Length: 268
Length: 77
Image (tube, rainbow over all chains, first blue to last red; front, side, top):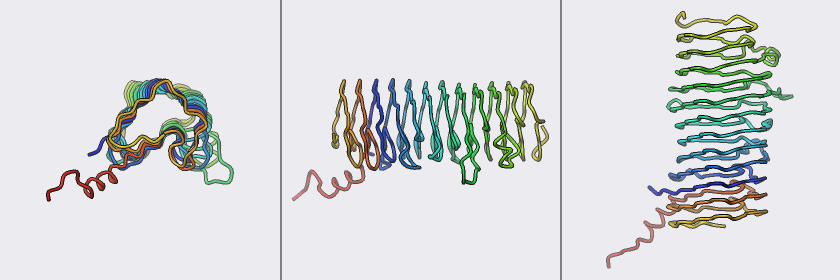
């Protein structure tokens, strides 16, 4: 099979734009190896509702030691891609016309580690991960200062924070969520995952109450999960488990405003 | 700039500024079997009307394979 490669090192992109792939768009015809290292990509603006910064439909992507700043476009759209993101810094995102903010990944092998995301205003999910077969791992990801804004005139159904749907083999380690407003942490549907040594603090549910949602923090449907050494502090209705199986060990719940709710599934 | 098939390219310490194309405002990588390395390079205000504001990675393997089949390098007479 034909194989091509693109290697980007110590490169800066400022104010480059396109309806799809403001910095990079890769077709899906064949295998590609794409590596972006020690680079700075900033001022990417969404011209349409499908505008992305990096968009791939196949191949392998590695992004390391790279900053993304001041974007109104979705950062990564990865379909059928093996992606490794390491030490990625994301600052100042305003995602109000695009359907997702940080990432949408379908049928990928995704490793996301040692990265920081902060300063986000979004009407949509930060991450939407969809796949029945994906191998996905998150390790040492800090997410802070995220503001969810309700869109006017739309059926508001998105939840904020990290959303992972229909994923097997998801591992979330050392996540830090801080100062979320009108947001939800994680939604996991029909997934198997482990969540270790993470903290969820100061998540509010005001917006969710307005739309008759009854949860924030985490909600799990039909999930098989292990929570270990978590810290849930000062959240609103922080953990809802529905038709799920799992164990919670060595976890601290402190100053949360509603009781944890359980229904269905195997008793914990 | 258009990077053609079966080639290795290196671009270093360069600037792409105020360029415009339908696909790949600054660089269109045609592929396949193409290697492009970029280092110490700045992209500024490059615009694509369709896809790839700075870089478009085409990797046209199907078109390449079709062309190989259609025009074989060695033929028996």
